[in-house]
Amino acid sequence: MPNEPMKIHLLTRGAYYRGQLHYSDVPAAQRPRLLDYLNAKARGRGPAGDRSSILRLDDAEITVYQGSNRTVSQAASASLVVTSIVVGFDEVRRLSTMPPSAAPAYEQRMAQEKEPVIVLSGTRHRLRGIVRGGAKRLGIRTADEPFVALTDVVIEDLSTEGRQPAALPFVALNMDFVEAFWSA
Image (tube, rainbow, N blue to C red; front, side, top):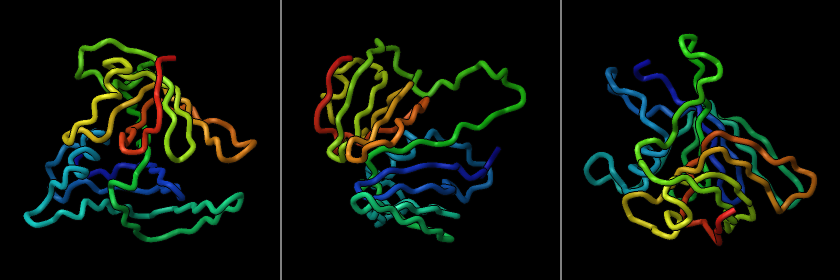
């Protein structure tokens, strides 16, 4: 549906954001993939002279973590610098015409091998997932694609005991925050 807000979740070093990303003011705009949108913003694309690479979330819920404490607040809008995002993912839209068993294809444009990997982030998160192009894809950091897709992901917060891992069909991983990775 044109100009429909995208419900996204973003994890940064000290906070977790959830809200609606309005990706276009053009009525005929098609909904982009979150991965493509983040990569375009990270490159600083936008109006002439706009190098800020800032995302605006509407109806934002912000959870700030300080040690074992967390503070949750609501805001009509919140702005984030794209380069501060460690992991991002969008909520999967359920279309009534799709059978419930049909999983969305997040990263099919590359006809490359799929390889299970484990990634440790500088923010003390462990991600287990599948990357197209194999583990070597994570070793190639390009300016055009600072965010890489991982599918069938289990993400664990290693800094907090007792927090259950989250299972996600897709995440966009910022390669600037990757500390280590290996084949699973």
